[in-house]
Amino acid sequence: MSATIAGTDGKERCRWCAAAAEFLDYHDREWGFPVDDDRRLFEKLSLEGFQSGLSWRTILVKRDNFRAAFDGFDFGRVARYTDRDVDRLLEDQGIVRHRGKIEAVINNARQAERLVQREGSLAAFIWRYEPAPDARREPQSASTSSESIALSKELKRQGWKFVGPTTVYAFMQAMGLVNDHVDGCVIRTKVERARRRFQRPQ
Image (cartoon, rainbow, N blue to C red; front, side):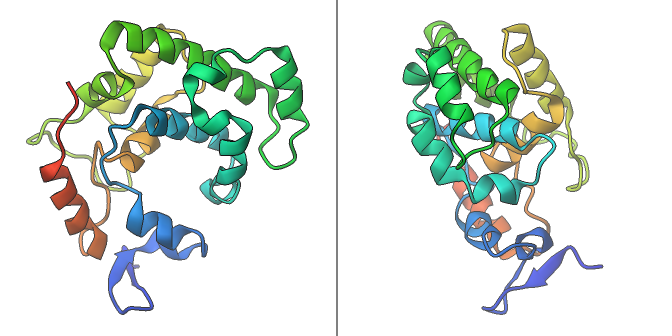
């Protein structure tokens, strides 16, 4: 089976983006393009944690609800959440109502604040784990990498939760630390150009 599939425009794309109608725009406009905005990085780590055990489509269709429920993933605000907020979120039918995952986002917001105080930004810390340009890459079907394992280990050491190596690798794929659009995908070259222009945060 080919790793690509032709879109309605006749151009080849990663086969997974045809699995659900919601995936195409996400694939073409977001997935793999480099991100250095702390709030977006925190949002994606949070949503990947919510995805654990579920499909990405389940999370993607609820993403606007998650953003509304968690104050746009402003981790400065989420870090101030109390038990009352946990109760509120557990009643919110627009999100995934999993106490452990909700509490993990709040915990991770507090850890993010501490990290930013130490490192200057979440982005500066995260992008240190980008693979070297000449690093040997695993097949594009890989679910972890040595870098995702290292980043996961360090986040856990700092007290973050729901940040296993597979979750972290999916985050790295989405936020552009690696370009895992398959060979032949029309978006792969666009992501490569974006990565070449991208100013790595310091």
